[in-house]
Image 1 (tube, helix red, strand yellow):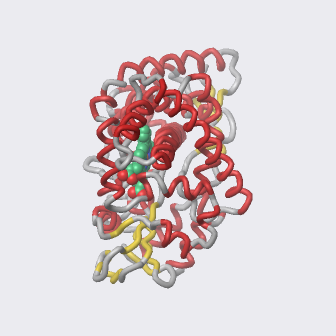
Image 2 (cartoon, helix red, strand yellow):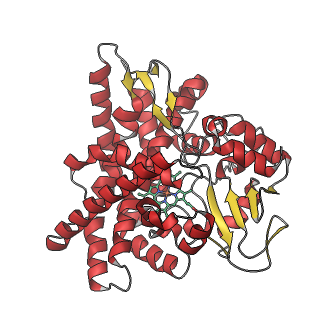
Length: 405
Ligand code: HEM
C-alpha cells in the first residue's frame, strides 16, 4: 500500500476505528512518504518533530485552505477556527501566543491544583452514589467530561450553569478539524460555531462591564486597551478555542487511560502500589493512544525537506502524531503499553511554535484524577461495551460504562 492509499484508509471507517495497523504499514514506507501530488505524510518521530519545530513549515492559512477545500470561507466553523491561534502563521501567531501566554501562565495553572483535587473527589463521590446499586456509570459523562470542562470553565470564568451544553457543542464543532467531513457534519459544526460565538460575545460583554479575576476578563481588557493586539473576531475565536481545546482532548486522555488500564490490570495494580507513577502512566497513555492523532503543515519557503524528502514551497505535510508515537526506530516494542518507559517524549502535544498551551494543565488533571479514581474504586471494571467516537484526528470514547461500586 502506498502513502495515498494509507491516508485514504485512515480517513475511512477502518482507520477511524483503529489507525494503528495502518501506521505500522506507513512505517514500512519510511519516516516520510508522498501521499498525493504536492503532499507528504510524516510518520517518523524525528521527521514529525523536525516539521513541527521548523517555523518555515506553517499552518495552512485561509487562502491555502480555500485552494485545498473550495467553499472553506462559507463555513463559520472553519472560519472561526482559522481566526484562532491554532491556525495562524507569523506574525499573527506570535502576537496571539505572547498575549494568551501572558494571561494563561504556568503560575495560574499550578495554582489550580487544589481546585482540581477537590473537583476530582466531588466527581468521584457522585460516581459512587450513581453506581452504589451496582448499575453501570458512563465514565465519559460522569467524570472524563465533567472534570476538564469544570477546570477550564473556572479558568475562563464560564458560569457553572452553562457548562452542560458544551460537550455536544464542542464535539459538533471539532468535526471541522477532521480531514474528511460530510455535509451534515459540517452543517452541525457551523451551527455549533455560531452558538459558541454568540455565547462568548455575551460573556465578553458581561466581563467588559464587570471584570472578574478570570481569563475572559483578562483577554477582554487587553483587546479593549490595545485592539491592534487582539481584534474582536480574534478574541472570540481564541475564547472558543481555549474552551474546546481545554476539555475535549483532556476528556479523551482520561477515557483512553481508563480503557487502557482495563486492558492492562497489571498497570492498574502498579498504579495502586506505587510501582507505576501517575506521571509515567500519563505519558504512556499520551504515547500509546494519543487524543490528537494528526496535524497538518505547509512549506512556506523554498528549499525545505522533510527527513531528506524535498518539500518545495506549498507542499502540504500530514504530521501523524499518533504514528510518530509508535515509531519502531524511536521506541522499543512500540505497540506495548508500558507506563514504566523512560525518556518517552511523545508528540501528542505537538512541538515548536504551536506546542500545546494547555499541556501542563492536561497533565496536572490526569496525574491527580487517575490515581484517585483507582484508589477510590479498587474493583473498578468495565460494565458493557465501550463505544469509540467516529473520529480520526481527536481520538477518544463516546461512552465507557464502568462498574464503580
Ligand atoms: C495546541 C494537544 C489540552 C490549549 C495543541 C496542539 C496539540 C494539542 C497537538 C498543537 C496542534 C498543532 O501543532 O497543529 C492537546 C492534548 C491535550 C491538550 C493531547 C490534552 C491531553 C489542552 C488544554 C488547553 C489547550 C487543557 C487549554 C486549556 C491549546 C491551545 C493550542 C493547543 C490554545 C494552540 C497553540 C498554538 O497554536 O500556538 N494542543 N492539547 N490544550 N492547545 Fe492543546
